[in-house]
Length: 118
Image 1 (cartoon, rainbow, N blue to C red):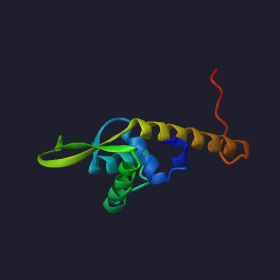
Image 2 (cartoon, rainbow, N blue to C red; image 1 turned 120 degrees about the vertical axis):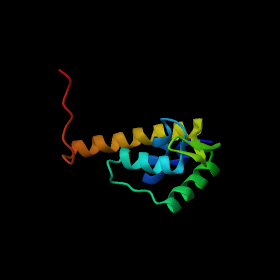
Image 3 (cartoon, rainbow, N blue to C red; image 1 turned 120 degrees about the horizontal axis):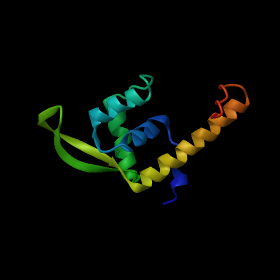
Image 4 (tube, helix red, strand yellow; image 1 turned 45 degrees about the vertical axis):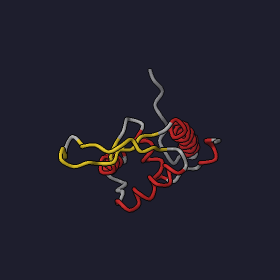
């Protein structure tokens, strides 16, 4: 599988993969981490989250990592998800693509220039 064939990622998929870079999470954990990483600008509803996860699993970018109790809900069994190596490659390529777009936006004056380290 050529990881570039998945680009560009839709923002929801990018944020899910990005969130899973820091480790396995259950669905609610993904929702909360996406909200945190996006500074509250993106709120995933469960239907869209699980639809995206099914597609990412089918595409080999995410895997189910089993069912177990979550730290905050010891009596409940939750399904956990993890990023695959292919998922890491895709999200890395997408981050680089987005960085190039941000640099182009800087060159057009849409974003402030970055300060050079002293």
